[in-house]
Image 1 (spheres, rainbow, N blue to C red):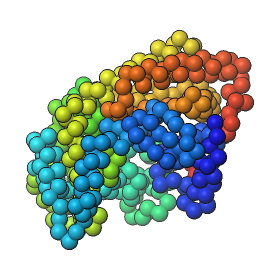
Image 2 (image 1 turned 30 degrees about the vertical axis):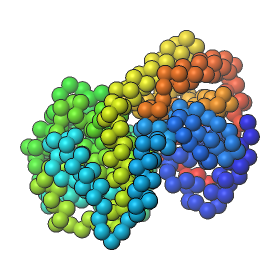
Image 3 (image 1 turned 45 degrees about the vertical axis):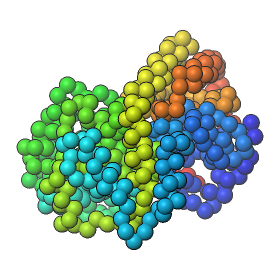
Image 4 (image 1 turned 180 degrees about the vertical axis):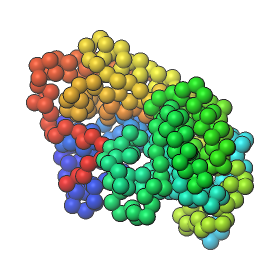
Length: 438
């Protein structure tokens, strides 16, 4: 397979862009350095074409979870084209932002007010700022991954790797003000005792308790309810980060499935099917504290983001996309497990079905992952150890994919038995965690 144009573009990027890409999760070295195409010329439905014209079936990160309906969805794009044709911005505000706020509060009846932004990381900053403004306190307790901003990375100030168990090991707080040391306090998912320990030492200083409702594991019985209760008792604002989980299992936040009402919930990724949009929704008195601070941006007022979100949510709800995403994801997880057993491989499979992942349970797991990516590319699939379901994925795509996985798993098992995994790699093994790209 010729990917010379793609590789040349990667070399150009190395010279001009620190880190090579704007998003760590899209760096080619996170997949298979030297063979992962890295750049695309066209994407439609579940198909992607690279710069050399090679066509792939998307069975990997699906725009890192942003393209919930599928690439270039006609219904969303038609709405966006209309927004462009009638002016994407002006000196006046677009009515779509009010319509989106109404719709989000209709879906989540506990919420009364909404602020919009354009990315998940900045939306979390807004949520934390509002919580601190509302409570007049500085510290936050959190679990899970919540972006790249100072409030979050400050957890790694003065420690070896406080964030290592939350998603990515090795995240450096270089550039984060040292004065933020001790303001972000981590606890692990399903470990209520860790949270209680934080509360016992910081109760009078805690502005918020922040977490994802679900990510890699199901909540233990009573865990979410107890976190909600602790937040209420301490006066901390309970913030649910729905950036990854939202709109994957249902139309709205995953917290709805568990009967939990936060004080604030944050959405992005899937909200606009790939168009930049994020929303911070919450209880009226808490959200109104935004007025006591300064939270404002020109690009939060453009029209395309809210327009895309309205079209995405309406289609998502009308086709019951969450049900389809769950069904596709369950097929993938079951397929991985069945084919690993068939071919004698040891895997860990996890994640909510629409955002699934697996890992090889071997010392050379990164080399095995890299070879999996390489061999699947040769068969015409963008595939990794992550899979984000899109509404455009159909049973036929899953069938094609799992047939290829079966063949690749068999080959990996044989090569691993012979100690020849590394010999088969056309490039270096994939990176693990946060590592500098030089």
